[in-house]
Length: 348
Image (cartoon, rainbow, N blue to C red; front, side):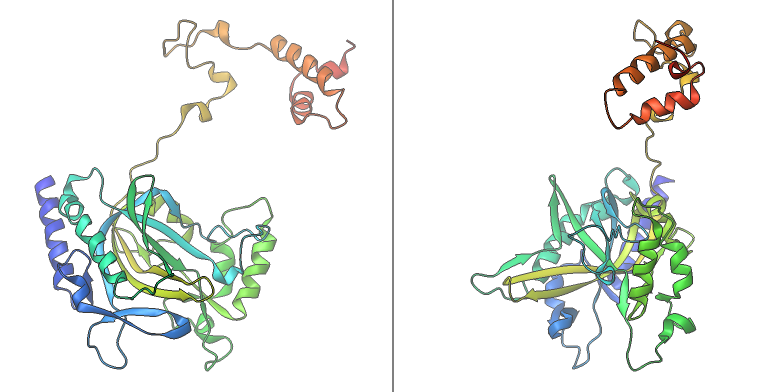
């Protein structure tokens, strides 16, 4: 089975190398086949070399693993209105980091090509000449010694003023744009402390000028992954990804910024289930995990389980200490509500 999977991996990489719709990032001399089309305020877009006055975007493709430690693809992009460092909701971007396939031997060929992929992307970024005194921010990131490619996805796209005010977001003709009503459901799955109403208001306000663009991510059966499943389906997965490279120059800061935007993402191998800390799932009725000797046993020593009298004694001390504070301890209120014979019903 492993041998067959390896053949499939080699066949897939060969398909990416021969594809007419883009270039494989591990191909030799990739920089000699591409150039940047100067787009002004919209950024300089990587295009095929000598492709005319209206060149298409050049799609770069490859097989990578999504780093689970640098995965920031919440349905709402992690937007928090109360965060002073946040800009407008329309500037929200999803992001993750692509690294070499780590332990799956079925994709050993993709892992061996990763160093060539990094070298090619750095060579593409050097196609933009840097003036003396300017700085450059690469899409290649080194996080804790782990080299990866930072991939972004813009959650919003500006509406075309030449179209009807409702635009394609309402007539459903675009696969990348959706109506506002489904977005209010999809983007509000994650409840935040600030309350869902603030994000809903921000979304409705952004919808006046922008369309909501869902991430074009698909599972192994090539079915679209809904936003509320991004974390479970993509974090740590091995994916085939197609992306573009865009260059922005910030004149005031004298800085060149290279950004990789994802166009399509297909899961080739689902992520392994994340480990669960058993202590977080423990209950008082389960008893301790270890005996007095520190060895794990299936049958718990019931002498170590706190009794109701022990809890009542602890709550009496806790209430006594909390009585000196003008703000009652929430733990004291907890014991008052759930512990029988609470000390407030007795006299010290």
